[in-house]
Length: 250
Picture 1 (spheres, rainbow, N blue to C red):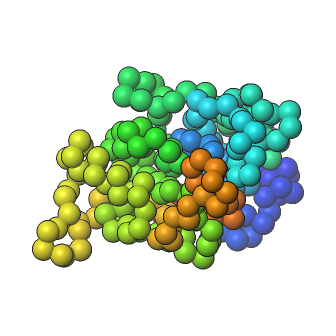
Picture 2 (cartoon, one colour):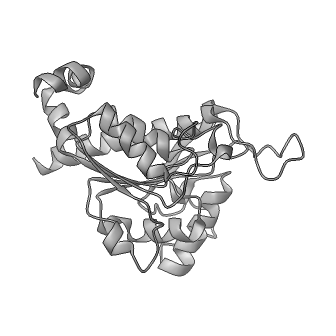
């Protein structure tokens, strides 16, 4: 650990120990989708001294993102989210390797865009892209995590963690599970009422019922207290995965 690391990330070393710090500094995390959940994942991953961070998203920053997304502020509107975010991450940790890809992941570019990493975190809203990423994620990372739907939810205390086979009350994960089973051959649920076979992908989700629009505006409202809580749980799981996987390989 160099002097700069001691000043910036001494709290990480004190919490996880010098060995844990070095594991994080040598680790690579890929975050796909840097919106209301993913932007805060990237922020926290950078502040945890992870050495290589790849952020992937083809969207630009819009004013309508301001209530929930970290890059959304004056001066950033109209720019690619990954460009704004990568500038911030480099200021947080100048020693980190930050890879910013302004693309949407699809079947044609998957292998070119998604490199091998220690943790792959899915924060995509598109169901088809989400299913593709998770169906093939284990080819790229030993730890694969996904975010459920945070829109229309207000109670951060109801944010939970489970294998996607066992998630209840989240429409996005339910649709994802169906696609993985029908299109990619993942194990089906049990008609007998027995607990479904785990699919090997951990989800952060909320079982809170979706609150409809309260002002007749289109779509669901989104509350940063919930999206950021999703993000922090994902980062917790990512760090645990890094330290656990590195320990297994030692």
